[in-house]
Image (cartoon, rainbow, N blue to C red):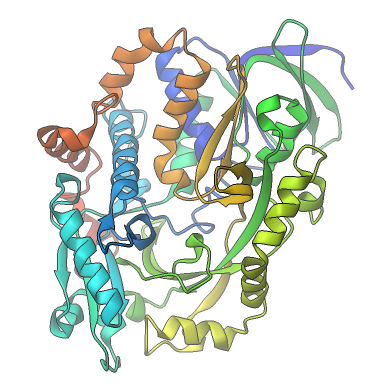
Length: 508
């Protein structure tokens, strides 16, 4: 091991969408800071950010039913839907800024317009969807949402889903045209390409083996080159751990008290994928249903139009599964080695509480292809096994921690864990993840650079006009932002041009 230590201002661990976003924000705020990135894979965006490892939904609560909860009195709580939507607006504003300032050349390389829909069956779910629609459509963030329980109208909206469907119970859907499909893998690579040309050192196939605090308060990292096995030492005043499922182990190695008592529960996913042009052409939307009883929120079934390298395909899933790995390219020992004295009781409590979830996940693993096709036929009654292939998606690690709800509570969502002095931060958790990356990374900046944030605010507001503003209280700003982002990201006028580039698409 080399004793020579390389010093840098900022170290980012993991070359996914989170590190790409934080690096890009910091480069705009302090261009002269030197940033070093360590990634264990051979290129950027190979794990959860990869376009084949997630559904590419720009999560903005336009179609995700689990962001709107029916209260005991029958009313619909839309507070989470509003929060997620506002956070996605942050992302679109920052991407628009990067397009206008020529950091991103062609937004259609990573984002295209695709309508977002919710689809339900059965009287009680139709009633819920109607109430949800009424609650959301009064809100400027959800303008343009339509509701229909007319099978004729649904046949126009979702012909592939209505073909051969026996309508023997009430059905309904909502539709909103302002939805998007986002290729987070492509976006990650675009952002890192720009960073690499701007004083950022990106080291692929480098694994961070250890992380320790130095006597001067900075952080020392022991990094191994996976190509030749050599190890080097690197230090920085600020470290961000954005390694997806791999973040928990590194957080534990840092030894910060804020990381104690936190565990992780891995959930794997599978998608059925259809790439046959005649079938793909019959569906142009992301359509979300309701999760089965006992299923985790990330297992909400959905049928998605995906645009990857200007070619459309359909994804259906995700089918959940269980693997002890914390990363798709991780180790079978990830789960067991994450159990430490500091989180043992939390993990044991979670195990006892979530037996039904574990049973559900194991049941999902055991499904045959025929059983998965049967589940797909709830959405596409005419689905044929030979038209759909199975794709293994990325691993998600849900946070387990002690909360007011009790010991070992499984959390769904993302969380920033940072040291008291702000010198190190880690991002844990899963969905809505990538869609809210800009909002989450601004939270990291606010927590970790409290002395600088005031001076940086004018620049942040120039990049993200709604920063520091509650959009809900400012409908005029909502319209301005949506017009601005739609124009700069080509989300309206580009629809016709996009049709020409992707002839296998049906009309939107």
